[in-house]
Length: 145
Image 1 (cartoon, rainbow, N blue to C red):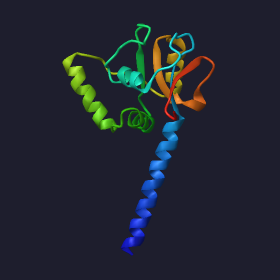
Image 2: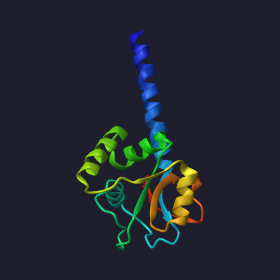
Image 3: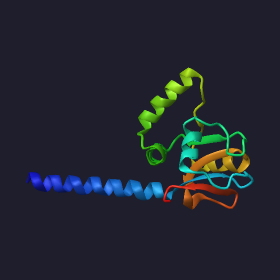
Image 4: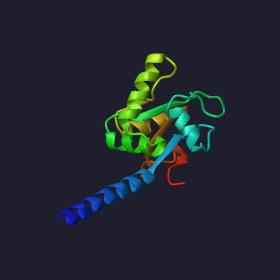
């Protein structure tokens, strides 16, 4: 009986890990179509989202955007990007904000608000589901590569 429960637990955990992987593969990082940035490395995206840099490679100011109401997507983004749980990312930002060194990403309520913000803000950078990307946006980073 214990072995059967253990097997069920392993299957459930494996399914959750697989679902998380598949879901994070759907996320992409986008900018406004008029932004001169065409591609970013993983480390550049980390630097922008974790406050190490505040500008795109061409020197123009970057405005990273987080999703406010979808903690599942936000959690997957940071787990995929920096390998940290959201609680740890939030604790990191609490320290950084207190020191005054950097500001956390701005927040938009949901994905539709993020899409509208990026479409009207040339220096915005955000993560969205790839299926939501329109011609007004440019994908600069993919998690599945």
